[in-house]
Image (cartoon, rainbow, N blue to C red):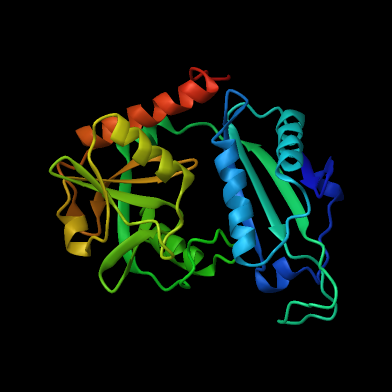
Length: 289
């Protein structure tokens, strides 16, 4: 496998990250996951823009201009012959010796860029059948709008769901639903699509944004507002969204079956609208065997 380290594409086996890197020591960095269909990037600019926005929020300077970064990632995808898959990229603040919580102001740290590319087919059965979710208290920090590589709170919630045999953990703060451990969450009530507003308590997912825009254009009413655990469990439909999950139905939350326990009509329509956005950008879906 070829990977990207700064501005060089190299064999993965040749890569070594310094033990004094602040990403390793403090989780001091930001990341993105970008999806490809038919070898074409989907919402490429939106992901790159968000990476730079996250970096700016923590005063981290990405050492490459956006057009340079795009070219590097395109080369990485081509080198790995990615048809339908993901590119994971992250930028850490760099190496600081000796280790210090304080970011030095007497010399600039050189940010370190890394990226990898993997083939990840679409899970069409999951999009149709969905899965179960649990609820869990949102114990993360208050800047969830930053796509930070420091994800311990998310990891604990995701693994709690995994141990319970569930697909996801839907998080809440004092009974107000925020998002999931690794995705955004939507509910449908009386034909209206509801999701938490894009503030500091959630990550404004790129897939989330596409869904909202496509739903509105497709005639599905959308409200971005707080909703409660009680509203979640009483919803007609629930689905989660992310770069890889696209629009995945949730058929049960804790002990409550959602609707009739299968993908609902609004979720189906929203996914079809989302797929149309992919096709418009990347072409018709093609399965590579």
